[in-house]
Length: 191
Length: 215
Ligand SMILES: [Zn+2]
Ligand SMILES: [Zn+2]
Image (cartoon, rainbow over all chains, first blue to last red; front, side):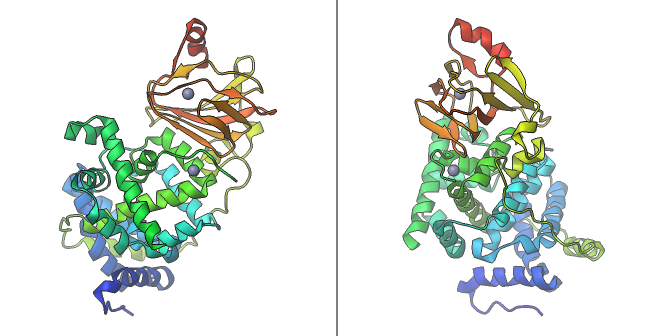
């Protein structure tokens, strides 16, 4: 049975509920809502990273098929749906575009699922994240946000970001470090 | 496991955004399997990736995209998902896929007395990945790095200017670093190393050693 999204501020919970429907009931209606939400964004990211429209379309199919297959591995207590789908998309891209086996990355997914004990901080991140991470991202100084977006939304290697922005690699690294620490601070403030 | 030396934050971001080649990804993944802190850190960085994705520009999908996928789902056999148990023993899961679960079974080759190496071939990687097994009291030649070097300690320990590194610790070093690790455990120190470019050894003897060690 399709789930309604009654309250836009509860969007993260709504997405989690959809994922759970997919995992437990293999519900295609819920899956289609997730597909419509994330598919075009995944395609946009893949195209920005240099994939042709056809390849980007194929990658969306790969990613969403994996989401369907592995839905049971998603753990709502450990993070937002977008985080999980993001990792699936990252791995699919590594697999296809770089022709590298995504095995070490996939291992971590499963290692994370398999690990019983999580630090209290990690648990806090898992349950709080989503809207919070997004607002932390919006608060970043533009120069930090820029490198974060190039790294995550365009899948640019750090060396290429440095080249594109005509910056030393050390500056790119330190901006990414600062952005990351800012995020951790925001998450810890809440925890 | 108490871990004292962790991944650099820039490496956490690099891993989360998929920017490491396979050799480094395996070392990072192996450390993450052994380290709760870095596992949480990677998760936080991946959450950033998720937030970026939620805010990303959409590109419209082809009209029949979902129907195509839907037909594939109908053909999917429903198989139970296999999830591995938590990492057992000294060899973390991402590495045990490559070498098996037992450090004694590694086909070590002696390079110089007291120092053995096992190279792990990765066709798709521009970096090299290898394991070292170094006897107690042995000093590595003092060296700098031509690029990033990551060393994950699996057994035993060594010390250098950065402190002591024991099982689970990772030395995440960039190209500006020089050091001379020496094994201070009473058992062999076994580590997993990824290097970006050939490591440069200082001094005459070391320059002769380098082609022997090949790192
Ligand atoms: Zn760590
Ligand atoms: Zn070194």
